[in-house]
Image (cartoon, rainbow, N blue to C red; front, side, top):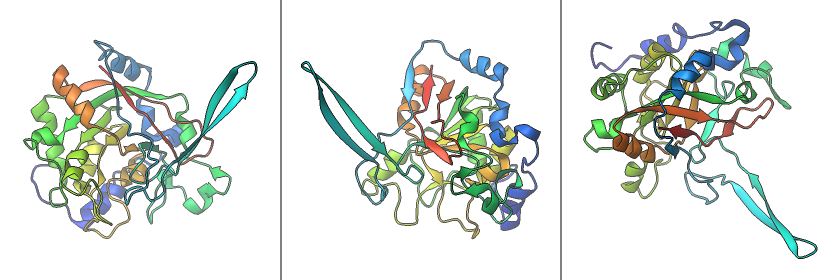
Amino acid sequence: MADHAIPTRAEIDSYLKDRRNWGRWGDKGPAGAMNLIDDAKRLEAVATVKKGRTVSLSRPFPVTPSPENPRPAVQFLMKGDRPPGGGAATDYYGVAYHGTATTHIDALCHVWDKNGGWDGKDPDENIQFDGVRYGTIDEWSDGILTRGVLLDVVKHRGGAHVTLNSPVHGWELEEIAAEQGVEIRPGDALCVYSGREKFAATNGGMWTRGAERPGLHASCLPFVRHNDVSLIVWDMMDATPNEYNIPWTMHGAIFAYGVSLVDNSLLEPLADVCAEENRNEFMITINPLNVIGGTGSPANPIAVF
């Protein structure tokens, strides 16, 4: 983008319709932009590993109720004896992972707008009681391994986190990439650190405030599409509410471009390690649960340096 003008509603509609990837990958369409991660791309990612240092990008399993976690995850333990003199501890996990608490990856069937879901699928036909038919999480059951790139918005802003009045814009992502001297390549995982924990520290410990939350503006959509990324890993999500009266702005990358999102990622530790290692590229791996017909999965993304 040559200037810093806020895009109009017509421009946003164009981002989500005229530049969409529907039909681009033919019979491999259900996997979406993950098709950009081929064997060569995985080897490129492996080549970024120099030390073997690992960083988890997952938040702890969210079992504590809060305004940000109205449907807390469930964990209960069972302890039993096993004669003679032994025993075992087991536990049960249950989680409604979509939302603003659990680190999770969205399948391509997760959201849609008036034009349909990913690859033009009609959600009324695609989504059935026993599971979804197209664009499901099991498309990535072999795991996701690619090159990750962190764009550190907080560092770019001199330590200031993103706020409700200062969302991340597409031109800012361009500036950060240039400032960091990092190239975004097709198939990369785009990691955007906006300072969720820093914002929460000034907002009563919470990132969300009712229907309001800071994050990425719809002006970031062309950056995502132009750079042909395979997925977005972010601590904040779409800036909400949006001024366009549309159901989804940045989440529209799912149904328009076939780009998956890893929501509620914990990126402050990743930003710290990137600063310590003096580089913003790494290998990232995500292994979703193999749920046939699922709309996503809890995730523990791992960055490897």
